[in-house]
Each structure stands twice: as structure tokens, then as C-alpha cells.
Image 1 (cartoon, helix red, strand yellow):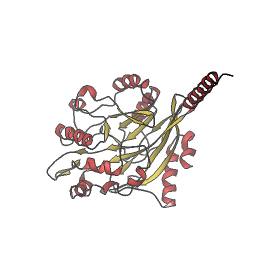
Image 2: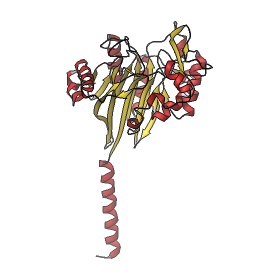
Image 3: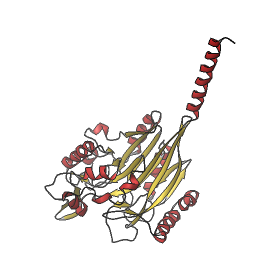
Image 4: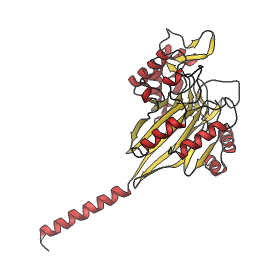
Length: 337
């Protein structure tokens, strides 16, 4: 056989082998999602003293093992001349500007800024939050400088997988509807068309939702209906916040609903379950052009000013059993594995 023909055959075989490897290749993103992060109040004062590592000191090393770390940022980040809590109302609080560095030092990748505290110190504080997060390289969804951008997701690309994060809130510490110009409202008429637009251009869609009843053991009917509509409308993962306690997990056609991730950097000693929760760890896999949540597990958490992953085996077991009890039977066994 002439040498030139043999060379051509070898090249063609090599190209075919490369194409086969590409089509069969697997891309994986490891995501960890946690609950409410309040960088105001006492934590904010610690940060103002210069200790930006304070809130995440016990979890940062774990966070850095993941490709994406998601949290619900339950406070604005604004300069209030040393104030991190309103002197006459402890339900109004803010983290300092350097709280954005705390998130970055802790390994947090992306946050939701859509919640009932999003404009606690006014629209100016919301604008400051956007600025400080952007300067520290923290991605965010749920608020925007332009009202037309409120329902747009932030897209994070890791390991060849594009993930869109949407964020919205059903409640606000304000009366009237003016706040809806500044924070994304949890409205299926607003969000479902956006999800459809991005469905074909990204690999995976996460929706963060702030709503439900505080301290309730289970999701209410409104939250459940909204979550089902969002997942059936094209989202792959639904993450709930606001109850301050952990809720269960549900699976619908391979898509997951985490009804409440509870607290994280948030001290509320008045209830047993406000001091305990879990992180949702997901492995998102892309293979042959199809992307799905391939597996998940729950990491038990002791919440507070400085949260930590539960190391006591009995404590950890109790948290997982509680979440499994609240979850759909189809996913309960996965939680306990």
C-alpha cells in the first residue's frame, strides 16, 4: 500500500476516534447550596473589626472543594457608618461593604439577592450591594440596576457546563408594589417565559425562591404550587429560602425541589431547627449533549454566626433523618445514604 494512502487512513482513524471520545465525554460540575446568610447584626460588627474570614472560617476549606457555591444573601451590603442593625428595629439590618470580601474569602461563588431584606436600608443600599458584590467577583441574581433585568439569570460556566441561576422573592418588608421595581418578584407569568428563553442556550437551570412561612415544618400550598410550576416549566433545580428551618426534598421527573435550606450564617437560638440545617450537594453531569442532576447528598449543618458542618455522628444522623422524614418517599433513602 502506498505510504501516502496509509497516512491518510491513519489520520482519518485518529479523527474518528477523537470524535467518538468527544461525543462520549462526560463533564461534571459539583454544586453546593446553603441557606440564609446574614452578614449584618453581630457578624457585621466582627467584619467591621477587620476579620472578613469570620463568618465562613469553619466551612471555607470545604467550600473550596466545589465548583460552585450558592447561598441566599439575606442582608444588603452597605455603608451605614458602622451600623449593622437598626437601633429601633432588629428586623432591619445590613452587612458592611467588606462583607463581599467575606463571601469571596469563604469561597462563595453566587448568591441570591432577592429576599425580604433586599431594601432594608432603602434603594441606595440595594445599589451598594450590587456594586460591592461585583467588585469582589461574586455573581448574583434577583436584583439589578435596570428593572428590565430583574428576572434575568446570572450564568456561570464551569467544566463545559453552563448553569443559569434565577432568583425571586414572594415577600418584602415593605407595603405596596413599588419594591417590585428593584427586586425580582416570584411570579410565574414573569419567570416562566424567561426560563423558556434560556432553556435552549444553557445546560442547567437553578431557581432560588424566597417565600413560605417562617419556622413552619413544611412548605405551604403556595410554595408547593409555585415550585411545581417552575420545575414543570423548565427549571432543573428549585432552592427554597425564608422559613429559617430545613424542609424536605421532592423529585419530579428527575428535577429536584429543595423546599427550604434553612439557616446558615444566621443565629436564631429560639428554635431547635433554626440552629440546624443542611447543605444540598449536587453532581451535575453532561454527557452526549444531555445534562442532568446525576446525584445529590445532604451535608448536616450547625448554623449560627460561624456555621460548621456537623461532626457529631448522632447530631448529623438526627438532621438527616429529620430532612428525610419531611421529604418525598422517593428521595428519602438517598438523603440517608
